[in-house]
Image 1 (spheres, rainbow over the protein chains, first blue to last red):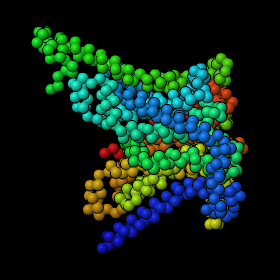
Image 2 (cartoon, rainbow over the protein chains, first blue to last red):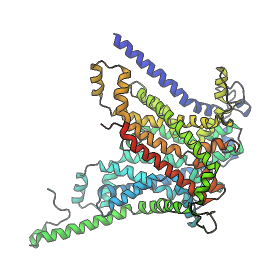
Image 3 (cartoon, each protein chain N blue to C red):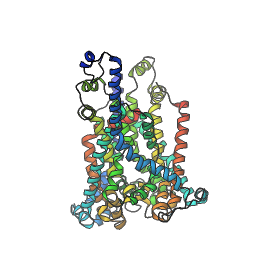
Image 4 (cartoon, rainbow over the protein chains, first blue to last red):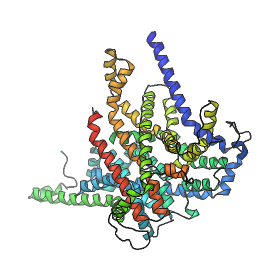
Length: 277
Length: 319
């Protein structure tokens, strides 16, 4: 009896602590949403109110008309899709080769790939800018998509996963006369869905939220992605918080929804990296 | 036994000189495998070379030049580095980054450990809690910065309203040099706790329950179990989180850019190294100078990581 009540007490305490923390985590989002529906005057009211006194749904329409939000959206979606599709295809191909095929110099090349992981992106930034200028890629989709396709991290992640798959399948396929590409495409990829989804999520997140790279590499309004778009929006309307918050909601909502549906893969992917180091 | 792949059985009867034929066949296969091996890694290898390795090397070279991004670069030896050591803007940014890191990393890891332990209690609604704690991790940093800037607003912000209601002092957060960096630290801790907690949680789940059962039989209490079993066995995960957090913290940019970017007066107390690199390289086009800054950042990260690797044997227990 005693242990049962103390166990119940302990559970209650755990729930209370977790709820308190969750409130701290969620409040900024609630505030963002609530402000986004307020009128400008309403947002400046003291004391602040949780719910808008009038719901101004037109704030969202106003954001869409005052800045070219549609273009930012489209650009961001295109960049995210391009980088993710490219990375999944090319990194998995290289990962299969590193994990399953024998060729001279493999270990040296793989070590060089790991070395790339060590270099912070800021070191690469300035010469990259020059390379992109030489290629005439500045302020185009090329610069936003192509360099982001080649990922040492993605190759490493998938290679580690492929290493855990049983070799018998590949041997059997070889005896049946399968080409290496068919083995990769018809055996390895279908068996690696969870790892591929994890990598896709990491890439989507990085591409969608990226700021510094597009900030440096693009300049025209037509090439703006969401992060650049809403930060320049803040520059123009620094105090009109209802509009700014409406913009922030629109920029973040797709990723939050994606996360809620795919969170199992998110968590698995992160835990997998955490363990493998 | 598996036969050498693709060796036609007919060869056996036709060719009395069997071992040689088999060798020739397999080496042909080995060549074929190697060719495909190279073909498959070629795109990634070329891309990484062009977009990462060449620029890394170029960055090192550029850091010894006075390049402005346009005219031909001229070598100026270690001028950039000696100048940087005297450049207050840069030394301050280095100091700010260090302060930011030293504040953010321990706070985040302590809260994350606590959270991971709580989430590991086999309670109902774990997935729901995890979702709440994880949403800040995946949200665009620029949007996060905008929301917090609004929360920090000294007159109309929610935080000062709550503090006022509790009769606590209401600082001018982002506009007070004593609080500006701390304000950014709070946001960073808020965004990183969920991520670190997920890694630590998977570490906790790897601890065999038999240890706890044995300890319970010996009559060990909750606190004892936490400090003598949980914490030591969690050290490999803690170590990983610590190394990654340091590396990420040293590269902080987005939050400073969005929250402080327009306030040039207070930028001195919040400018980070990456912010300084961006400013020097892409606002003032001192590309040689900025490359030297990036190089110093790389070295600092490398030294701190190596330091952590070296000292891990003092406190990390691998099972």
